[in-house]
Image (cartoon, rainbow, N blue to C red; front, side, top):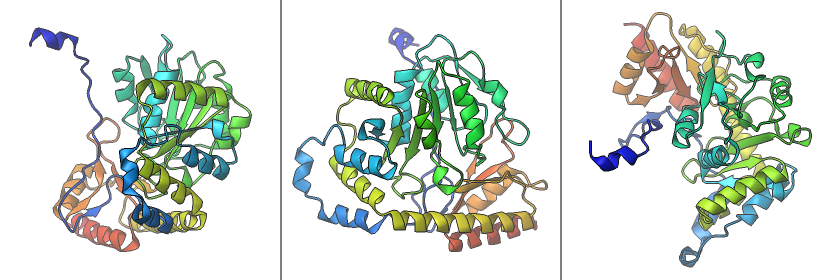
Amino acid sequence: MKNWENNIRKVKPYIPGEQPKDKGIIKLNTNENPYPPADGVVKALKDYNSDNLRLYPDPSSEELVNALAERYSVKPSQIFVGVGSDDVISMAFMAFFNSSKPIIFPDITYSFYDVWAEVYNINYEVKPLDENFRINTDDYICDNGGIIFPNPNAPTGVYESLDKIEEIVKGNPDVIVMIDEAYIDFGGESCIPLLNKYDNLLVIQTFSKSRSLAGARIGFAIGNEKLIKYLNDVKFSVNSYTMNSLTQKIGVEAVKDENYFSETVNRIISTRENAKSKLKELGFVFPDSKSNFIFASHPNKSAREIFDELKKRKIFVRYWDKHRIDNYLRITIGTDKEMEKLFEALECILSK
């Protein structure tokens, strides 16, 4: 090892889902929306004045912030936007998790949390989900430096009730509790109404899933005005111009088209419920999902084998070789046609 390597921060990076370049792939591995973005987004892309690219974007993303504030019935000063919810959460880790006490999150959860903790030298502890992949509330009513978890959870799809969330937030008045609601639009109730009662709560959402803009990278947080100011202080200390002007424009258009948003979300929910029935018929077991994916296991065939066989058929799902979940596949909900092809492939695989 060279001497200069002694001063390098070495971390084990987050590994995203595969983005295959081959044509004809059925891509059910990264929880993208199978439907295109709203018509207003497409029009904004066509009408965008390219001369704007020589100018810096609005550092406050005012137009997008105002659209989100109106949509969620909060003040613009309660909204923070970033380049995907990953960027928002990363900023929040820097801003709020600075205690010597460990932050806590579940053992089975979004696998970026421990990466950020290690990058920023934040102590952390994981709390095991129970045998049904549910949070034990008592595990989170303890001395800690902050809390984060998704609801619905990733990769399990399990949704925790608003009452349980409130119990955790109320039981931790001295630290920030972040609820990562990347999948909340597909089932359950958002924690946003709790913001009126708790100043230590930060709710984080994304345009990547329900609004079909994973490629644009838009995320946002809603919290009390003081929390949002602290987040902006960190942002402007790192990079003032985090979101480009074109992305801000299409983000506004995505928020404005509520009818299209509801239509596509409901289509995905309908396909998901049908997929649950089909997978049960094939012998799969899984927790009840309130997200745009299903976390499934088969008692007679290993997840790794099914994953490999599906990949041979150009159907990509997500597999982790990790403790407790190494016999599960996370299957993104695609179009009805894509899901039918998945079921046909699974029938063939399971019959061998």
